Length: 94
Image 1 (cartoon, one colour):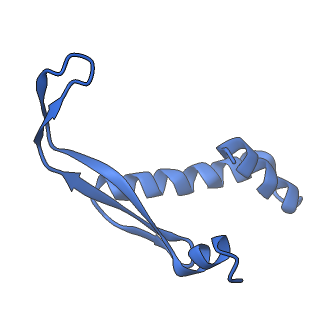
Image 2 (image 1 turned 135 degrees about the horizontal axis):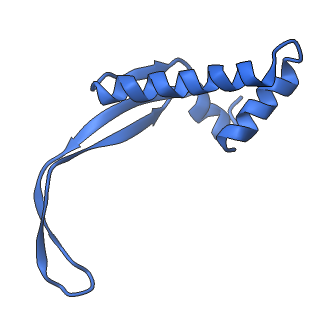
């Protein structure tokens, strides 16, 4: 599912809301999650999962095309850990 499909589904299920308002709500939620993660905060959606940021240390890598060693700088990457309800539902336990 992509963002526009999510917006359309929410708008269809809530006919009292204008589509532009639903779009604004969805964009605000995503922007807030992004901003919180950019600050290094953890975002937890109970039953769904938790978004956090992990730091990957600098290391020496290898260019697969040439075999040459290259320096890879440290970086921060997003990490998602599923919640118990989501994990159970995916495994057919609910």
